[in-house]
Image 1 (cartoon, helix red, strand yellow):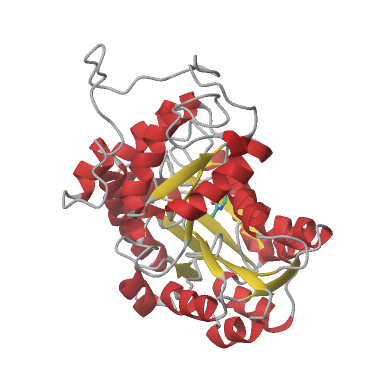
Image 2: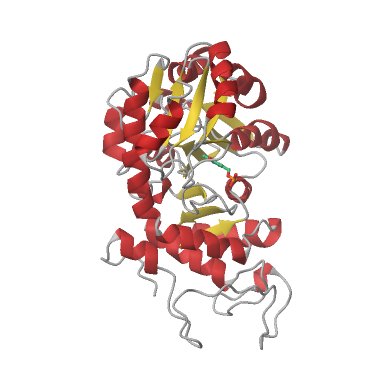
Length: 402
Ligand SMILES: *Cc1c(COP(=O)(O)O)cnc(C)c1O
């Protein structure tokens, strides 16, 4: 069942899109096709360029039925024509950059983004002859001023990891399209449920499927959804030639997670709002950033752009020293929330992100850009990924240290 662009609801789409009972066995759950190659009656050359769209499956790096099932499900959730899955979120980001950019091109990248993407943009792309401008995407004048004749891509992230700053996606897409550039958005924090990137004008919607889409902390994966034409380019370049494809087993796990994504996101957001409100009431907590709180500096934009506020909270406790002291205390005291990186899982996760350290390793911001970062993050933030436990239990756990 494709269910793409049909009128069924979000829950039905998440459960049924891409899947159908197995025609040979009647199995209700989808099978996992652990085959690296396929018996074929095609006599073809051995190049991506010989691949005929109608040819079916030929080799695992070119496509796999279990991965294709997940890709159809995600395309249906994003309301795009197609989707390509990759081995990780970083493989998805790399696939976007290396498919759509060449030496001599210019790309505008959010000056704060997932650390791996920030480092890729700062260190790797310039080495390949690609000009990179790092821009605070919440500053539309700065975005407009950064466009050049050879700007091919604008890559944003909203809400941005780890500080929860938003980008006005429709406005940035408008500016990019005016300049003839594609727009990609890392929508991992929002999940496909939190914002409709396609409707906002985003051409390439990227996720670390390791996070909310998979949702259970047991499989790495990445995805990019977009037009059939753009996704075909990515398959030919990134999947087939760079080779960072998703394993069928991970696709199966992530598809099972994706089936409950709308229900989980509702629970993540409900619980996160309660925890965020409790955090705001604590004396030890000096600042809470959550798009669902009226105190978020871009709460109005959040209400316009997001249909679910997700489960990501960042909060401050004062100086870097105070933050580090509390981080050390919570390692020994928390009984439910895990002290770990990553996010979007059913288990709640917390991690301390010190501003100074992140500036040195990943972001290297100065002047106004650093001020904008500090307006959201101060000397550092605790990034709390609110899971699916009971809000009262999370609050009780946190109250041991806050
Ligand atoms: C985790 C994450 C990534 C990287 O994804 P991996 O699956 O870990 O490679 C990219 N962007 C954001 C916003 C993330 O949170």
